[in-house]
Image (cartoon, rainbow, N blue to C red):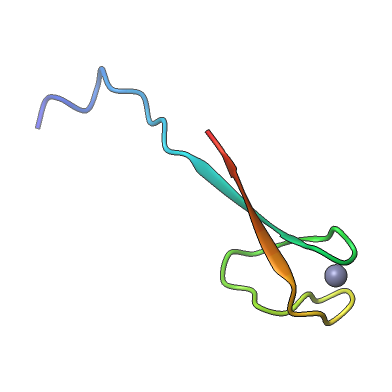
Length: 46
Ligand SMILES: [Zn+2]
């Protein structure tokens, strides 16, 4: 296991956000805690 040192941890990041109010939620969240809608959208940041 000597190949991990030189490789940057460059995983793409996924942000979950309520479509209605824009609150950022956790990845397992299916319902917005702020406005109770189920419209959660994903944004991928690479
Ligand atoms: Zn919301």
